[in-house]
Length: 108
Image 1 (cartoon, rainbow, N blue to C red):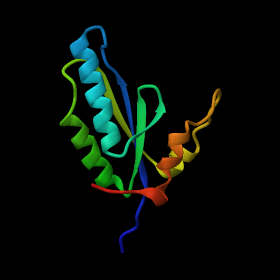
Image 2: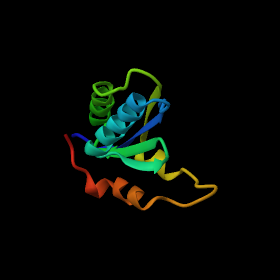
Image 3: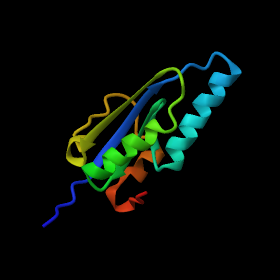
Image 4: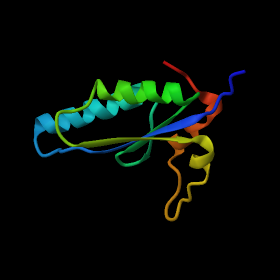
């Protein structure tokens, strides 16, 4: 009996943007996140829903394939239940965050 445990994969990044090449790399990294189903939660914080921990690991590995040469990129995997306990202390959800609903999953 396999139980699906939906997970959220959250990517946090700070990338340099001082030069034209760095801005190009920043844009390419961000576009690859979006192409792979990640949506912006905040500037430089993107997330997506996966069916289970194995799928979450696949996305973490996938991100490694398009990392820029400089900067800081972190990946955090949490359960949907943990994600749902997040409090927004100031501001509101971006409209795109509604796409993080587990009913809308498209897997790779």
